[in-house]
Image (cartoon, rainbow, N blue to C red; front, side):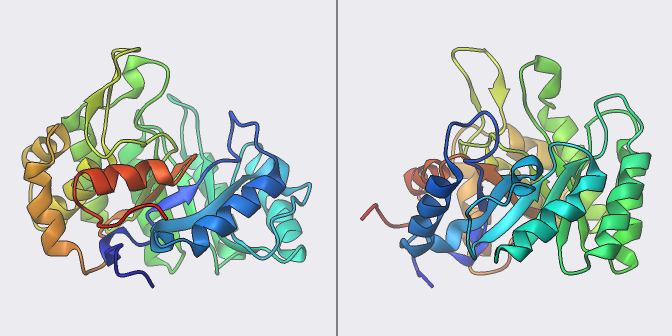
Length: 281
């Protein structure tokens, strides 16, 4: 394993090149994933994410580590997983939205927990809207974990409308709720930047993935919502450096990872802020 990528960042970034919108052929995506897996920054790489609709057509991904992202009905995930495994892929995880914003997440969670029971070797992530029913949904996920299911949460912290971007206080409350329930969570695709920033084209202020990671560290060290929110609001790397440095050689708390359409984007960000030493070959 490369010594240039600290254990804190191991498996942090899934390859989301096949998720929409995309124009990448599955064979080309598999070849690019193999190239990343052979590069010096390979420890940063998680799974190759494959939409369940594509998975049912058995894309040529070979024996790669794959995560299935549900883009249709949850009850079709079993067939998608079986097809990939029959083709030799190593299916590691499943991600599925359990409700739209404003809907009750409990029916979808029941379906996903049934999948977690039927597929005990998979990590299953329930994408839960940051809206009505969130805390009860986290309780349901925590109940599943306490019964031995490998289930966690997933959150979408951005989108095409301002209300889809939680404030630092709102996201800090979610992180602390996961901390209190000992729940790992993933972030949806889109966290390209390490630090909190405002997109000059849309005017939306995006959360940085390094802010979220250090927010998780701060939360598990006993901080309350206000302190975690300060970390999430930081737009400069300096206040984030020391907490990350102290934890760099240990496991990452709470944040299981996120997807990026090119792993080199978050890699470049981590190099830029001094969290990873290295360069492109």
